[in-house]
Image 1 (cartoon, rainbow, N blue to C red):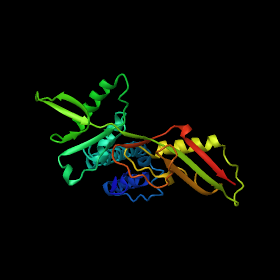
Image 2: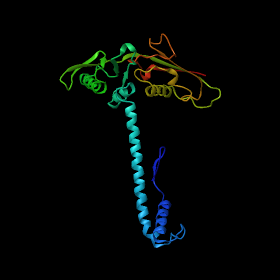
Image 3: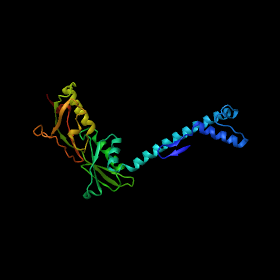
Image 4: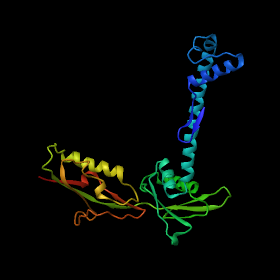
Length: 270
């Protein structure tokens, strides 16, 4: 069985194994079998089943080493991205069904961590949810880090001491969205209905935007979504339509734009 850094372990092929047996027989018994005349011998018939079994074991061994390599690679990724890092912490919360974001600390924030979790504090079960989130913070955040936020839960640690764990709720900003499109003279494609276009915008944003991320209009509807359009302009308004903007909104870690399907309007110019 051979090994390479790129491909791992590779099973020996049938011809190689049978060739090794043939050479061993020639050496041991003074015969001069060649690859061609060895095939019809009783030696060949005898060792055929054995070689097949060896090949089967070689294949299984190679598969085991492949799985081991995959396991080591995955373990290394977890080590490189522990739950206490910014992306690791977000992923850890996601694994428990929570959307969270973490403030990128400046020098003045040393020793502290600010976490925001997108949950509804008006939910009747919010007290249980808050306790669960703070327990996750206790488990995921490095000991000694001071957590910041207005949502607080005091938890007794294993050493008997009580410690406050905190997080923030999102700063929700309701917005309106307006999509203006100009049809292209070079296209003869059917223009989707207003409802289909609005749904596409809604779905795209849901897939490409989340808590604490910059709101980037050009990412949410473009030529890939509307190959029939010559120009595409997606704008947002946070004051009920008084001011429309198509620029990127630079978000803080706790910022979250909110809207419904009915808050999206579509204008198509011929």
